[in-house]
Length: 101
Image (cartoon, rainbow, N blue to C red; front, side, top):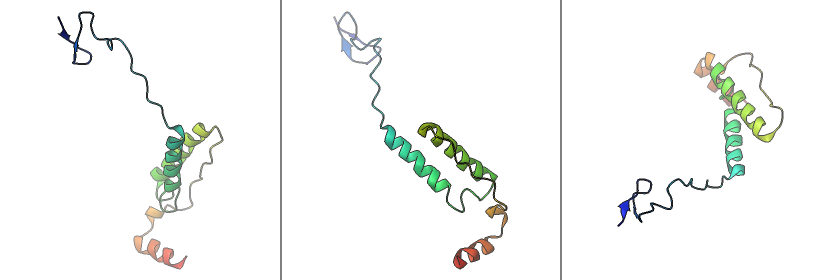
């Protein structure tokens, strides 16, 4: 007589489900794709106007850079605090400087 398996929800023989107490095989991870995603996040966060906007965004860049340096087994290239945070400046001044560069 078959019974409903608590593991898979299917109907198994008297001995129980062959899948009971068996851990599924982990799916292979595309490490290079993951590392490239972290690189892209770091690059976007490192753009002018992101990393130097305020202390939070500066710390976010340095944190992503630190994580990437651990993955790539290298020394991190932290950015120093800018002389002035962009978010402290009036928006009109920020936009007028963009047009001049």
